[in-house]
Image (tube, rainbow, N blue to C red; front, side, top):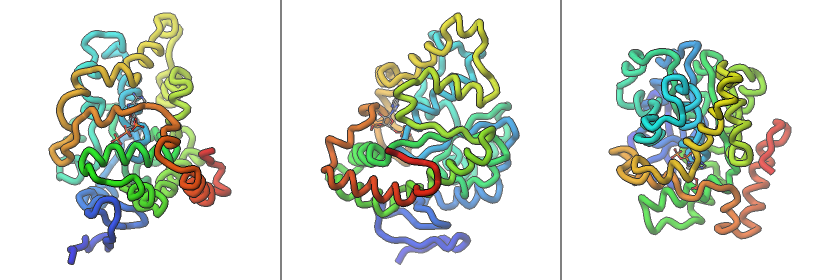
Length: 306
Ligand code: PAP
């Protein structure tokens, strides 16, 4: 018997991670349930806070780097040799909300100067004060590529994990912080209702035109690039600083582990960095099955993945 968390009446059933629980409509690792409760009760955003939000394996590391580089560009010019992103993993450049709130370390947020930049994988209902309390930048990704990326990542922890297990979990909605469609739709709807509060980005669009998306991000953050910055090539410098090839080549991302609780080498965050890798892992029937599940869930919302 597992002991379930009374305040949220979480229930447990087998999924990719045996330590996951289904609570308030979402799958969370059990260690994140206290964080979800604490975030709902106690997270008090400041109006100029910025939160990077995403499902795992949908571009979090990249968007963390892009948002940090864009917001901090006056203190840390992106071409500078001493830029923090040249010596730290992008996840080390901003606090992870559930990491702080699950460990009772939320006071660490209070001492950060404004504007604060934070990161979360939580679905929007678990961080209800974020919108409209502050600004959120969200990134989504084709769920087929997310599934492939998640499988490669999880295999670093469990080498015999079959792709079919991860695939079925995605189709069932039983992935960490999922179902995918409910996570994405929560932020999508908020972005359409309050576009000045939630910026909705796509991994595939970031790949297609990173510079244009960085400009969009900067405008959303209220710090558009000036003519002087344009002439100086600041946007291109951010594109390069945060590019897959550059980040992957850095010692900070080749050595060390993500977290003492997650003994995965940091290089697991920089595998392929492309879209469409699902063709190498799924049959056409699997792809169309997942596409159909997602399309059915998205119907009438104005959001599509195809
Ligand atoms: P996380 O949720 O554990 O932080 P996240 O960063 O969201 O992971 O996802 C990792 C994916 O983003 C990897 O995709 P892949 O497995 O398909 O390769 C990783 O390669 C990709 N990624 C990381 N950094 C970048 C980047 N700078 N540009 C493009 N893709 C990137």
